[in-house]
Length: 122
Image (tube, rainbow, N blue to C red; front, side, top):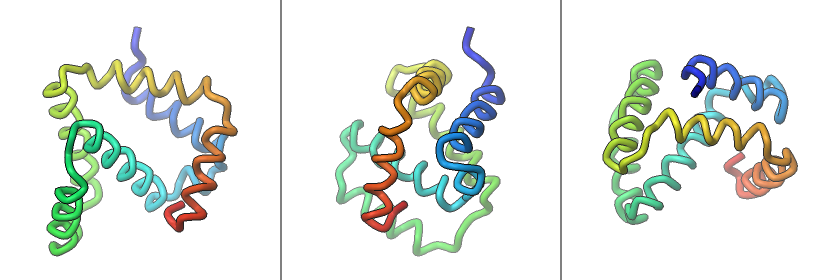
């Protein structure tokens, strides 16, 4: 049985805190940066061009910032629609990644993060 989203969220929060420490786990800007990275990678995997990503980024930043609570909700809503369009169950994919995170050697995540820090996006 797949854990509820609340249970997965709590598990991931514990995992990030254990792996990188409580300060990084609570860093909203840092978590947003990681989410953006994953969204761009998902878009790339779906065939979205870098040109479109650049145009969309400029469009978003030409507007005032939205309400964080609403924007996070819209990310979740859009993820569900994206998963459905791609023929996947979002809960199953999410659960698979939670299991993967908890069972992967932490060194992999630390090495990946160190590369991001070196690029100035950590």
